[in-house]
Length: 205
Length: 147
Image (cartoon, rainbow over all chains, first blue to last red; front, side, top):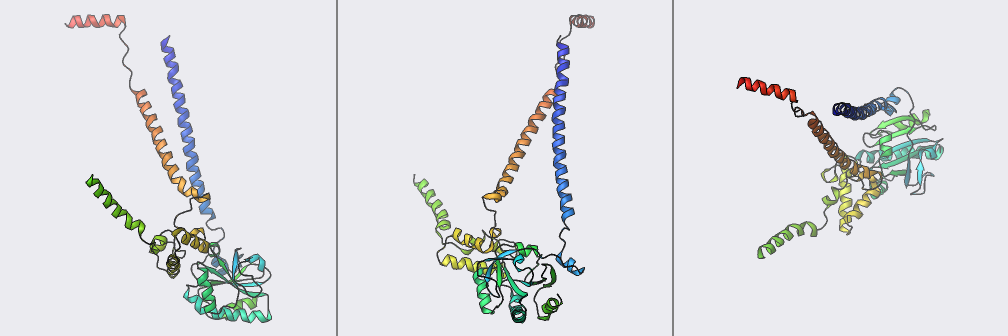
């Protein structure tokens, strides 16, 4: 009588063990599949929203990333100080978007050039606005910079680095000409050394 | 008793200068990172880092405490300026996950060790069954013949 009972017990334990191993194998499989899926998604999406520079080089006009930031310097109908302004608020106008910071030396030498571009369009054509975007900066330093270099055009200030990242900046300054449809028509990496770098592109829009 | 008092005095000497000293720029700087170089501010030397250190030094002179200065820098640069993630909201995940991972590892090792030890016990061959009456009789016969 005992022997059949023993024979019955052994396969029962075996079945339990098999079930555990199956569950462990499935769990392990799911984990490995998950990691592989993440890697594949990462690889596939790496080139989504490709480089702005690449698109411009191919003659395309990539959409300008949206942003919203508070006004640091109010001018040309953009303000008051502290109010939020987004790129969408300026749709229908050509925007010369200049990323700057008070500690950035080339920003000092391009400030008069941007002032000149702003002055050129301010009087005759309100459909073009020069807009600064102060990033990675202390507001008190930024305000002192604006005073010292007589910045006449409006500027926003971003506390985080979302716009810096979205516009794929590699340093400061960088300037973008955004057409009235909100697409990037021109990107200037580094200092703008001559107003015509911007005005030629603006006048062609 | 005198020895204990001396040890206590030495311990106090060791602790007091660290806590009673005035707040230094580096004490605050190591809590935040330089936004342009992505390194802790105390080891950064970029122009932006210099501005931030000056901001900290000026606030220390005004008598601000460490947390107030850090809060001021967060207001200027956003949460991303903190060298370590905040211990609240979603950022709490960054603090909890490593601990939970270690805990899960310990539990997994425990379960594996328990499973292996059970398997080894099960695999140990059982003692041979006692000889039947017939086998015992034959064994005795053999032994008698040999003896």
